[in-house]
Length: 128
Length: 381
Image (cartoon, rainbow over all chains, first blue to last red; front, side, top):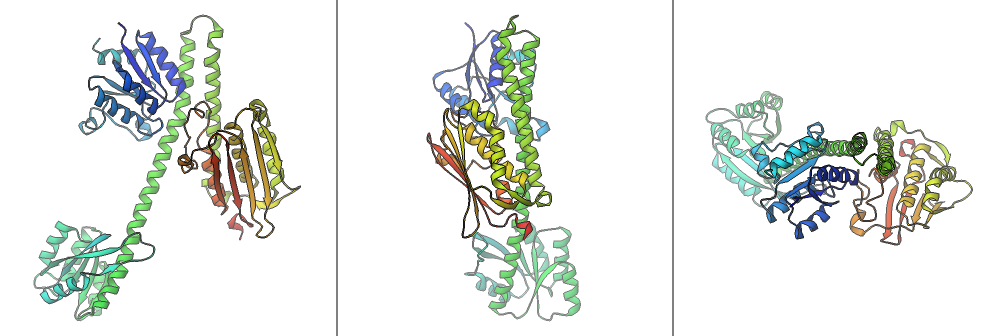
Protein backbone atom coordinates (compact mmCIF):
# COMPACT_ATOMS: atom_id res chain seq x y z
CA UNK A 1 0.00 0.00 0.00
CA UNK A 2 1.17 3.50 -0.79
CA UNK A 3 2.30 5.60 2.14
CA UNK A 4 0.36 8.81 2.76
CA UNK A 5 2.11 12.14 3.13
CA UNK A 6 0.36 15.23 4.49
CA UNK A 7 1.60 18.55 3.10
CA UNK A 8 0.44 21.83 4.64
CA UNK A 9 1.45 25.11 3.00
CA UNK A 10 -0.42 28.36 2.39
CA UNK A 11 1.44 29.07 -0.84
CA UNK A 12 -0.73 27.37 -3.45
CA UNK A 13 2.11 27.21 -5.96
CA UNK A 14 4.51 25.59 -3.57
CA UNK A 15 1.78 23.19 -2.51
CA UNK A 16 1.12 22.24 -6.13
CA UNK A 17 4.82 21.77 -6.91
CA UNK A 18 5.55 19.78 -3.80
CA UNK A 19 2.54 17.56 -4.38
CA UNK A 20 3.78 16.86 -7.91
CA UNK A 21 7.24 15.96 -6.63
CA UNK A 22 6.07 13.77 -3.78
CA UNK A 23 3.55 11.94 -5.95
CA UNK A 24 6.38 11.22 -8.39
CA UNK A 25 8.28 9.58 -5.52
CA UNK A 26 5.35 7.14 -5.36
CA UNK A 27 3.41 8.44 -2.35
CA UNK A 28 -0.23 9.28 -1.75
CA UNK A 29 -0.52 13.02 -0.99
CA UNK A 30 -3.08 14.85 1.15
CA UNK A 31 -2.83 18.65 1.24
CA UNK A 32 -4.12 21.52 3.36
CA UNK A 33 -3.55 25.21 2.69
CA UNK A 34 -3.52 26.66 6.21
CA UNK A 35 -2.66 25.81 9.77
CA UNK A 36 -6.37 25.64 10.56
CA UNK A 37 -7.09 23.22 7.68
CA UNK A 38 -4.03 21.19 8.63
CA UNK A 39 -5.33 20.80 12.17
CA UNK A 40 -8.66 19.59 10.81
CA UNK A 41 -7.01 16.98 8.61
CA UNK A 42 -4.94 15.64 11.49
CA UNK A 43 -8.08 15.06 13.53
CA UNK A 44 -9.37 12.40 11.16
CA UNK A 45 -6.28 11.20 9.35
CA UNK A 46 -3.01 9.72 10.48
CA UNK A 47 -0.48 10.27 7.70
CA UNK A 48 2.76 8.29 7.47
CA UNK A 49 4.72 11.52 7.31
CA UNK A 50 3.95 15.24 7.40
CA UNK A 51 5.59 18.23 5.74
CA UNK A 52 4.67 21.64 7.20
CA UNK A 53 5.43 25.15 6.06
CA UNK A 54 6.63 27.35 8.93
CA UNK A 55 4.94 30.71 8.32
CA UNK A 56 1.24 30.52 7.54
CA UNK A 57 -1.54 32.37 9.41
CA UNK A 58 0.87 32.62 12.29
CA UNK A 59 4.59 33.14 12.10
CA UNK A 60 5.02 29.85 13.92
CA UNK A 61 2.21 27.82 12.35
CA UNK A 62 4.64 25.03 11.44
CA UNK A 63 5.84 24.71 15.01
CA UNK A 64 2.26 24.59 16.26
CA UNK A 65 1.27 21.91 13.77
CA UNK A 66 4.37 19.86 14.61
CA UNK A 67 3.54 20.06 18.26
CA UNK A 68 -0.07 19.03 17.69
CA UNK A 69 0.64 16.13 15.37
CA UNK A 70 3.36 14.78 17.65
CA UNK A 71 0.99 14.93 20.58
CA UNK A 72 -1.63 12.92 18.73
CA UNK A 73 0.66 10.60 16.78
CA UNK A 74 4.12 10.57 18.39
CA UNK A 75 5.48 8.16 15.76
CA UNK A 76 4.67 10.25 12.66
CA UNK A 77 7.85 11.87 11.31
CA UNK A 78 7.59 15.63 10.65
CA UNK A 79 9.54 17.77 8.22
CA UNK A 80 9.43 21.56 8.54
CA UNK A 81 9.95 23.14 5.13
CA UNK A 82 10.86 26.75 5.38
CA UNK A 83 12.16 29.66 3.40
CA UNK A 84 13.32 31.17 6.66
CA UNK A 85 16.98 30.38 6.90
CA UNK A 86 20.21 31.74 8.19
CA UNK A 87 20.21 34.61 5.73
CA UNK A 88 17.21 36.13 7.46
CA UNK A 89 18.94 35.75 10.80
CA UNK A 90 16.20 33.42 11.99
CA UNK A 91 17.95 30.12 11.94
CA UNK A 92 17.46 27.03 13.96
CA UNK A 93 19.19 23.76 13.81
CA UNK A 94 17.92 20.49 15.15
CA UNK A 95 21.39 19.27 16.02
CA UNK A 96 21.27 21.81 18.83
CA UNK A 97 19.85 20.12 21.95
CA UNK A 98 18.09 23.20 23.27
CA UNK A 99 16.22 23.54 19.96
CA UNK A 100 15.40 19.85 19.84
CA UNK A 101 13.59 20.12 23.14
CA UNK A 102 10.99 22.56 21.83
CA UNK A 103 10.88 22.08 18.06
CA UNK A 104 8.85 18.93 17.68
CA UNK A 105 10.02 18.17 14.16
CA UNK A 106 12.41 15.53 12.92
CA UNK A 107 13.93 17.60 10.19
CA UNK A 108 14.08 21.22 9.06
CA UNK A 109 14.54 21.65 5.33
CA UNK A 110 15.02 24.66 3.13
CA UNK A 111 12.16 25.10 0.67
CA UNK A 112 14.58 25.28 -2.23
CA UNK A 113 15.75 21.70 -1.65
CA UNK A 114 16.35 19.57 -4.75
CA UNK A 115 13.83 16.82 -5.49
CA UNK A 116 16.31 13.95 -5.18
CA UNK A 117 17.52 15.20 -1.78
CA UNK A 118 13.94 15.52 -0.60
CA UNK A 119 13.16 12.00 -1.73
CA UNK A 120 16.18 10.68 0.13
CA UNK A 121 15.21 12.48 3.34
CA UNK A 122 11.60 11.30 3.18
CA UNK A 123 12.62 7.70 2.59
CA UNK A 124 15.13 7.88 5.42
CA UNK A 125 12.45 9.09 7.83
CA UNK A 126 10.02 6.42 6.64
CA UNK A 127 12.79 3.83 6.97
CA UNK A 128 12.27 2.70 3.38
CA UNK B 1 3.33 47.80 41.28
CA UNK B 2 7.09 47.59 40.81
CA UNK B 3 9.59 47.54 43.62
CA UNK B 4 12.96 49.24 43.60
CA UNK B 5 15.67 47.83 45.83
CA UNK B 6 17.48 50.40 47.94
CA UNK B 7 20.68 49.58 49.75
CA UNK B 8 21.57 51.81 52.69
CA UNK B 9 25.26 51.72 53.51
CA UNK B 10 25.78 53.50 56.83
CA UNK B 11 27.51 52.52 60.06
CA UNK B 12 24.84 54.18 62.18
CA UNK B 13 22.00 51.69 62.76
CA UNK B 14 19.68 54.61 63.54
CA UNK B 15 20.03 56.00 59.99
CA UNK B 16 19.41 52.59 58.43
CA UNK B 17 16.32 51.99 60.54
CA UNK B 18 15.15 55.53 59.83
CA UNK B 19 15.38 55.06 56.05
CA UNK B 20 13.53 51.78 56.34
CA UNK B 21 10.77 53.45 58.36
CA UNK B 22 10.43 56.44 56.03
CA UNK B 23 10.20 54.29 52.93
CA UNK B 24 7.99 51.55 54.31
CA UNK B 25 4.76 53.09 52.99
CA UNK B 26 6.28 55.42 50.44
CA UNK B 27 5.21 55.12 46.82
CA UNK B 28 6.26 57.09 43.78
CA UNK B 29 3.79 57.80 41.04
CA UNK B 30 4.03 60.04 38.01
CA UNK B 31 1.22 60.41 35.49
CA UNK B 32 3.43 59.13 32.64
CA UNK B 33 4.53 55.97 34.45
CA UNK B 34 2.42 52.91 33.88
CA UNK B 35 2.77 51.67 37.42
CA UNK B 36 3.46 52.70 41.00
CA UNK B 37 6.91 52.20 42.48
CA UNK B 38 7.59 51.23 46.07
CA UNK B 39 10.82 50.40 47.80
CA UNK B 40 12.41 47.54 49.67
CA UNK B 41 15.31 48.44 51.90
CA UNK B 42 18.55 46.44 52.29
CA UNK B 43 21.08 47.42 54.93
CA UNK B 44 24.86 47.32 55.23
CA UNK B 45 26.95 48.63 58.14
CA UNK B 46 30.24 48.79 56.23
CA UNK B 47 31.47 49.43 52.68
CA UNK B 48 32.72 45.85 52.38
CA UNK B 49 29.34 44.49 53.36
CA UNK B 50 27.75 46.97 50.96
CA UNK B 51 29.76 45.58 48.03
CA UNK B 52 28.75 42.06 48.99
CA UNK B 53 25.08 43.03 48.88
CA UNK B 54 25.58 44.92 45.61
CA UNK B 55 26.96 41.70 44.14
CA UNK B 56 24.28 39.41 45.55
CA UNK B 57 21.13 41.54 45.31
CA UNK B 58 21.86 44.04 42.52
CA UNK B 59 20.03 46.99 44.10
CA UNK B 60 18.63 49.78 41.93
CA UNK B 61 19.66 52.58 44.26
CA UNK B 62 22.43 52.86 46.85
CA UNK B 63 22.29 55.44 49.65
CA UNK B 64 25.92 55.72 50.62
CA UNK B 65 27.50 57.32 53.66
CA UNK B 66 31.02 58.45 52.94
CA UNK B 67 32.52 58.04 56.40
CA UNK B 68 32.58 54.33 57.03
CA UNK B 69 34.67 52.19 59.39
CA UNK B 70 36.59 50.28 56.69
CA UNK B 71 36.72 51.37 53.08
CA UNK B 72 35.19 54.75 52.42
CA UNK B 73 31.96 55.55 50.58
CA UNK B 74 33.77 56.95 47.55
CA UNK B 75 35.57 53.64 47.16
CA UNK B 76 32.24 51.82 47.03
CA UNK B 77 31.19 54.37 44.43
CA UNK B 78 34.32 53.68 42.40
CA UNK B 79 33.60 49.97 42.61
CA UNK B 80 30.07 50.41 41.24
CA UNK B 81 31.40 52.54 38.43
CA UNK B 82 34.24 50.18 37.52
CA UNK B 83 31.76 47.31 37.24
CA UNK B 84 29.49 49.49 35.06
CA UNK B 85 26.47 48.48 37.13
CA UNK B 86 23.19 50.19 36.40
CA UNK B 87 22.84 51.56 39.93
CA UNK B 88 22.02 55.09 41.03
CA UNK B 89 24.27 56.11 43.90
CA UNK B 90 23.28 58.87 46.31
CA UNK B 91 25.82 60.09 48.86
CA UNK B 92 24.62 60.85 52.36
CA UNK B 93 27.15 62.96 54.17
CA UNK B 94 27.19 64.82 57.43
CA UNK B 95 29.68 67.43 56.27
CA UNK B 96 29.51 67.88 52.56
CA UNK B 97 32.89 69.21 51.58
CA UNK B 98 33.19 70.65 48.10
CA UNK B 99 36.18 68.46 47.39
CA UNK B 100 34.29 65.30 48.23
CA UNK B 101 31.27 66.45 46.27
CA UNK B 102 33.38 67.06 43.17
CA UNK B 103 35.11 63.72 43.44
CA UNK B 104 31.88 61.82 44.02
CA UNK B 105 30.09 63.54 41.17
CA UNK B 106 33.02 62.79 38.92
CA UNK B 107 32.74 59.16 39.93
CA UNK B 108 29.08 59.06 39.06
CA UNK B 109 27.15 59.92 42.22
CA UNK B 110 23.72 61.12 41.22
CA UNK B 111 22.74 63.20 44.23
CA UNK B 112 23.73 64.31 47.71
CA UNK B 113 21.57 64.20 50.78
CA UNK B 114 22.92 66.09 53.78
CA UNK B 115 22.85 64.32 57.10
CA UNK B 116 20.73 64.60 59.18
CA UNK B 117 17.93 64.63 56.63
CA UNK B 118 14.20 64.99 57.04
CA UNK B 119 11.86 62.32 55.69
CA UNK B 120 10.71 64.85 53.08
CA UNK B 121 14.25 65.43 51.83
CA UNK B 122 14.80 61.72 51.37
CA UNK B 123 11.45 61.29 49.67
CA UNK B 124 11.87 64.11 47.20
CA UNK B 125 15.32 62.91 46.25
CA UNK B 126 13.95 59.41 45.66
CA UNK B 127 11.09 60.74 43.57
CA UNK B 128 13.59 62.30 41.20
CA UNK B 129 15.73 59.21 41.10
CA UNK B 130 12.75 56.98 40.38
CA UNK B 131 11.69 59.23 37.55
CA UNK B 132 15.17 59.18 36.09
CA UNK B 133 15.44 55.40 36.43
CA UNK B 134 12.07 54.88 34.84
CA UNK B 135 12.86 57.10 31.86
CA UNK B 136 16.27 55.54 31.38
CA UNK B 137 14.82 52.04 31.39
CA UNK B 138 11.95 52.97 29.07
CA UNK B 139 14.37 54.52 26.60
CA UNK B 140 16.46 51.40 26.57
CA UNK B 141 13.40 49.20 26.17
CA UNK B 142 12.04 51.27 23.31
CA UNK B 143 15.37 51.14 21.52
CA UNK B 144 15.41 47.38 21.80
CA UNK B 145 11.82 47.10 20.63
CA UNK B 146 12.58 49.32 17.66
CA UNK B 147 15.39 46.99 16.69
CA UNK B 148 13.09 44.03 17.18
CA UNK B 149 10.43 45.51 14.90
CA UNK B 150 13.01 46.29 12.23
CA UNK B 151 14.38 42.76 12.41
CA UNK B 152 10.93 41.23 12.16
CA UNK B 153 10.14 43.40 9.18
CA UNK B 154 13.26 42.29 7.37
CA UNK B 155 12.74 38.61 8.03
CA UNK B 156 9.13 38.73 6.89
CA UNK B 157 10.19 40.77 3.88
CA UNK B 158 12.79 38.26 2.81
CA UNK B 159 10.21 35.54 3.22
CA UNK B 160 7.74 37.46 1.04
CA UNK B 161 10.36 38.07 -1.63
CA UNK B 162 11.64 34.53 -1.67
CA UNK B 163 8.25 32.84 -1.89
CA UNK B 164 7.47 34.06 -5.44
CA UNK B 165 11.03 33.33 -6.54
CA UNK B 166 10.73 29.78 -5.28
CA UNK B 167 7.36 29.38 -6.95
CA UNK B 168 8.54 30.58 -10.35
CA UNK B 169 11.75 28.62 -10.10
CA UNK B 170 9.75 25.52 -9.27
CA UNK B 171 7.46 25.99 -12.27
CA UNK B 172 10.39 26.53 -14.61
CA UNK B 173 11.89 23.30 -13.28
CA UNK B 174 8.66 21.46 -14.04
CA UNK B 175 8.70 22.86 -17.57
CA UNK B 176 12.35 22.07 -18.11
CA UNK B 177 11.83 18.46 -17.15
CA UNK B 178 8.54 18.29 -19.08
CA UNK B 179 6.96 16.87 -15.95
CA UNK B 180 3.43 17.45 -17.22
CA UNK B 181 4.06 15.58 -20.48
CA UNK B 182 4.89 16.65 -24.03
CA UNK B 183 1.71 18.66 -24.66
CA UNK B 184 2.50 22.35 -24.36
CA UNK B 185 -1.08 23.32 -23.52
CA UNK B 186 -0.83 21.38 -20.28
CA UNK B 187 1.64 24.00 -19.09
CA UNK B 188 -0.64 27.00 -19.60
CA UNK B 189 -1.84 27.05 -16.04
CA UNK B 190 1.58 27.00 -14.46
CA UNK B 191 2.76 29.69 -16.87
CA UNK B 192 -0.17 31.85 -15.77
CA UNK B 193 0.65 31.18 -12.13
CA UNK B 194 4.28 32.13 -12.74
CA UNK B 195 3.26 35.40 -14.36
CA UNK B 196 0.92 36.14 -11.46
CA UNK B 197 3.64 35.55 -8.92
CA UNK B 198 6.04 37.79 -10.83
CA UNK B 199 3.38 40.51 -10.97
CA UNK B 200 2.87 40.12 -7.23
CA UNK B 201 6.57 40.48 -6.65
CA UNK B 202 6.69 43.59 -8.81
CA UNK B 203 3.85 45.10 -6.75
CA UNK B 204 5.64 44.25 -3.54
CA UNK B 205 8.78 45.98 -4.75
CA UNK B 206 6.79 49.06 -5.79
CA UNK B 207 5.09 49.13 -2.39
CA UNK B 208 8.45 48.82 -0.71
CA UNK B 209 9.73 51.80 -2.64
CA UNK B 210 6.73 53.80 -1.42
CA UNK B 211 7.41 52.67 2.10
CA UNK B 212 11.08 53.63 1.96
CA UNK B 213 10.13 57.03 0.65
CA UNK B 214 7.75 57.57 3.54
CA UNK B 215 10.12 56.23 6.15
CA UNK B 216 12.92 58.47 5.00
CA UNK B 217 10.64 61.11 6.41
CA UNK B 218 9.42 64.57 5.77
CA UNK B 219 12.67 65.68 4.20
CA UNK B 220 11.59 64.07 0.97
CA UNK B 221 8.06 65.50 0.97
CA UNK B 222 7.50 67.77 -1.97
CA UNK B 223 4.64 69.95 -0.89
CA UNK B 224 2.76 72.03 -3.43
CA UNK B 225 -0.68 73.41 -3.99
CA UNK B 226 -2.43 70.52 -5.69
CA UNK B 227 -5.92 69.55 -6.70
CA UNK B 228 -7.06 66.43 -4.86
CA UNK B 229 -9.95 65.94 -7.27
CA UNK B 230 -7.58 65.74 -10.22
CA UNK B 231 -5.40 63.26 -8.34
CA UNK B 232 -8.46 61.16 -7.50
CA UNK B 233 -9.57 61.15 -11.15
CA UNK B 234 -6.12 60.12 -12.25
CA UNK B 235 -6.16 57.19 -9.78
CA UNK B 236 -9.55 56.13 -11.05
CA UNK B 237 -8.20 56.15 -14.61
CA UNK B 238 -5.26 54.02 -13.58
CA UNK B 239 -7.54 51.51 -11.84
CA UNK B 240 -10.19 51.46 -14.56
CA UNK B 241 -8.87 48.43 -16.51
CA UNK B 242 -8.83 46.45 -13.30
CA UNK B 243 -12.37 47.59 -12.44
CA UNK B 244 -13.65 46.61 -15.89
CA UNK B 245 -12.05 43.22 -15.54
CA UNK B 246 -13.83 42.72 -12.20
CA UNK B 247 -17.03 44.36 -13.52
CA UNK B 248 -16.96 46.92 -10.72
CA UNK B 249 -18.37 50.40 -11.18
CA UNK B 250 -16.53 53.40 -9.75
CA UNK B 251 -18.15 56.74 -8.95
CA UNK B 252 -16.68 59.95 -7.61
CA UNK B 253 -18.60 62.55 -5.62
CA UNK B 254 -16.45 65.64 -5.36
CA UNK B 255 -16.45 69.38 -6.02
CA UNK B 256 -14.93 70.78 -9.25
CA UNK B 257 -11.66 71.36 -7.51
CA UNK B 258 -10.25 70.85 -4.04
CA UNK B 259 -6.93 72.60 -3.62
CA UNK B 260 -4.61 71.55 -0.80
CA UNK B 261 -1.00 71.99 0.14
CA UNK B 262 0.25 68.44 0.04
CA UNK B 263 2.73 66.11 -1.56
CA UNK B 264 0.87 64.96 -4.71
CA UNK B 265 2.81 61.68 -4.82
CA UNK B 266 1.64 60.84 -1.32
CA UNK B 267 -1.94 61.76 -2.11
CA UNK B 268 -1.80 59.54 -5.17
CA UNK B 269 -0.55 56.62 -3.09
CA UNK B 270 -3.51 57.07 -0.74
CA UNK B 271 -6.04 57.07 -3.59
CA UNK B 272 -4.38 54.24 -5.50
CA UNK B 273 -4.26 51.96 -2.50
CA UNK B 274 -7.76 52.62 -1.23
CA UNK B 275 -9.35 52.38 -4.66
CA UNK B 276 -7.46 49.27 -5.73
CA UNK B 277 -8.39 47.58 -2.45
CA UNK B 278 -12.03 48.56 -2.95
CA UNK B 279 -11.98 46.88 -6.36
CA UNK B 280 -9.85 43.93 -5.35
CA UNK B 281 -11.99 42.90 -2.39
CA UNK B 282 -15.28 43.68 -4.11
CA UNK B 283 -17.80 41.28 -5.55
CA UNK B 284 -18.43 41.00 -9.25
CA UNK B 285 -20.81 43.76 -10.40
CA UNK B 286 -20.12 45.64 -7.17
CA UNK B 287 -19.60 49.36 -6.78
CA UNK B 288 -16.91 51.65 -5.40
CA UNK B 289 -17.85 55.12 -4.23
CA UNK B 290 -15.32 57.83 -3.57
CA UNK B 291 -16.43 60.89 -1.62
CA UNK B 292 -14.12 63.82 -1.40
CA UNK B 293 -15.08 66.99 0.45
CA UNK B 294 -13.85 69.79 2.64
CA UNK B 295 -15.52 70.74 5.87
CA UNK B 296 -16.62 74.37 5.69
CA UNK B 297 -15.91 75.11 9.33
CA UNK B 298 -12.55 73.63 10.13
CA UNK B 299 -11.31 73.07 6.58
CA UNK B 300 -10.57 69.41 7.22
CA UNK B 301 -10.49 67.27 4.10
CA UNK B 302 -12.27 63.94 4.05
CA UNK B 303 -11.54 61.13 1.63
CA UNK B 304 -14.03 58.33 1.90
CA UNK B 305 -13.82 55.15 -0.17
CA UNK B 306 -16.61 52.63 0.20
CA UNK B 307 -17.13 49.30 -1.49
CA UNK B 308 -19.74 46.56 -1.66
CA UNK B 309 -17.27 43.77 -1.08
CA UNK B 310 -16.50 40.97 1.30
CA UNK B 311 -16.03 43.21 4.35
CA UNK B 312 -13.79 42.74 7.35
CA UNK B 313 -14.56 41.06 10.64
CA UNK B 314 -14.27 43.19 13.77
CA UNK B 315 -11.43 41.15 15.20
CA UNK B 316 -9.40 41.64 12.02
CA UNK B 317 -9.78 45.41 11.90
CA UNK B 318 -7.00 46.10 14.35
CA UNK B 319 -4.54 44.01 12.33
CA UNK B 320 -5.39 45.67 9.07
CA UNK B 321 -2.91 48.54 9.13
CA UNK B 322 0.23 46.65 10.16
CA UNK B 323 3.09 45.72 7.84
CA UNK B 324 2.63 42.54 5.81
CA UNK B 325 -0.74 41.75 7.28
CA UNK B 326 -3.14 40.05 4.96
CA UNK B 327 -6.43 38.92 6.36
CA UNK B 328 -6.69 35.30 5.36
CA UNK B 329 -10.13 33.94 4.67
CA UNK B 330 -11.56 31.63 2.07
CA UNK B 331 -12.44 34.73 0.02
CA UNK B 332 -9.06 36.45 0.16
CA UNK B 333 -6.91 33.40 -0.32
CA UNK B 334 -6.70 33.74 -4.10
CA UNK B 335 -6.32 37.51 -4.09
CA UNK B 336 -2.73 38.66 -4.44
CA UNK B 337 -1.40 41.43 -2.26
CA UNK B 338 1.82 42.54 -0.65
CA UNK B 339 0.25 43.18 2.74
CA UNK B 340 1.82 46.63 2.71
CA UNK B 341 -0.81 48.83 1.04
CA UNK B 342 -2.82 49.88 4.07
CA UNK B 343 0.21 50.19 6.31
CA UNK B 344 1.65 52.59 3.75
CA UNK B 345 -1.57 54.59 3.62
CA UNK B 346 -1.66 54.78 7.40
CA UNK B 347 1.95 55.95 7.56
CA UNK B 348 1.29 58.72 5.04
CA UNK B 349 -1.86 59.81 6.82
CA UNK B 350 -0.04 59.96 10.15
CA UNK B 351 2.87 61.81 8.63
CA UNK B 352 0.33 64.44 7.62
CA UNK B 353 -1.23 64.48 11.08
CA UNK B 354 -4.46 62.99 9.80
CA UNK B 355 -6.57 60.02 10.79
CA UNK B 356 -7.70 56.87 9.07
CA UNK B 357 -10.53 54.62 10.14
CA UNK B 358 -12.47 51.69 8.80
CA UNK B 359 -16.06 50.66 9.14
CA UNK B 360 -17.20 47.36 7.78
CA UNK B 361 -19.94 44.78 7.71
CA UNK B 362 -18.83 41.31 6.61
CA UNK B 363 -20.35 40.35 3.28
CA UNK B 364 -21.78 43.86 2.77
CA UNK B 365 -18.77 46.06 2.32
CA UNK B 366 -16.21 48.36 3.91
CA UNK B 367 -15.72 52.12 4.20
CA UNK B 368 -12.26 53.60 4.62
CA UNK B 369 -12.24 57.20 5.79
CA UNK B 370 -9.19 59.43 5.76
CA UNK B 371 -9.41 62.83 7.42
CA UNK B 372 -6.60 65.25 6.73
CA UNK B 373 -6.19 68.47 8.73
CA UNK B 374 -6.57 71.91 7.20
CA UNK B 375 -2.88 72.51 6.88
CA UNK B 376 -0.73 69.57 6.10
CA UNK B 377 1.91 68.42 6.20
CA UNK B 378 2.86 69.83 9.58
CA UNK B 379 6.39 70.54 8.37
CA UNK B 380 4.91 73.56 6.66
CA UNK B 381 3.65 75.22 9.78
